[in-house]
Length: 583
Image (tube, rainbow, N blue to C red; front, side):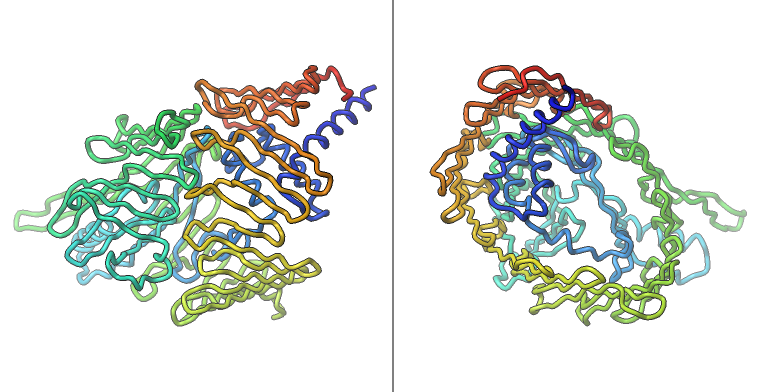
């Protein structure tokens, strides 16, 4: 009897997944089982990756419909030495997600590390002069760990330039008037309004900045509102010192709060606490750094202190619990979790010379990494510091792995990857979208993306997509002579229905999403109905996880699945109560 129950439950799972599979088109046979699991996991909000997963919502469903079987440049752009050090600059680059505020529109707190300061060569041997020089240099140039760095920009109207830091930590200076913009800023445009009191940045999202203050020709601005591609809005609030105090995710009409992150700096100068609307929190602990110095005068010596920028030493979040970091006297990261880094000064610039037991050697346009297993990795760059190839060699000199980059001017045009089992080639458009993907013994996949800066997938092989104007929300999906699907949204751009027309059998299937009308987690799916035959009622815990699913077939209760999550949002128990099993 127990075996029959399990088999029947599996049949139900396959039944639901088979219906949903038609909404994402055909897929490769070898990955069909994985696709079913992915669809079902999203449907019932099963946590897959504690760092990247969050509550099922309409926007995630939208992303999944497009990207489930689509390779992305993220998967093939592995470039950092041991995923930490940039082989060109020799600087460590680290990216972390510390919090996810769950909701119909989620918000994430992202943090990244970049040193971005050069070595100081003292002109004098006197330590007090060197300490002063280093302190001034660090206060001016030091970056370290950054979060929400895109919330501020500056403008110099004498030279008509805008300086903005991207979420990835890169700083760009944009010429407002020059139509011949470099590749990396072709996607941006700027509007200066209200007598320089407001700047609007048009990118994938639309960012509204408001004036803070000016110093001679430099005007500073803070991010007030960000309009996302799906029409949802992020609102930023600030304290009296113009530091971010909260972020709210709202519907496009700014009537409902979907999620929020609040920032508390009142406890201590060395402590910042973050709280989400979904009952999670993170804490940043900073270490104040100072140096004791002495000045010689005719009566003896006078002691004084030189203060350096504080460094982030400990992070507590639901994913890592405690994340500890150590630094040297130049504020350079020397220990991160269990990884040790050491540095050397090359041409006035600090570069990592060793990661644990791996030694890094820098030469002109080349970087070599010797691992403790004897393998050597060679990174080669052009004179413009664009990557040309990455090759890894066995100790006997035989090539183990290679990745070759081809460029059309400033644009990456293709990447070839070869090793013992892979032979892959990817071609890119000018926005770094993969437009052709070729793998050994597999059909070539071709794609077409919009060229308006939104990078929307318009076609993948014989599958076509259409979107609601000025959004990334799917309006139609079409596979000629096979399937036609339409997507319906409410007034707040939340998905409420998918209609699938089977062009072969002339059958129609409908998936409906009935949304929550009250807080918390307003407009999250409350009930999912499939063809008015199967319905799944969802209940949420305080973190926004689906804690219970009640399944009905033909309005008759079938079974329930209950889940419990711990304080880190990790699944701790999963139980199923079975009742009616036949359908």
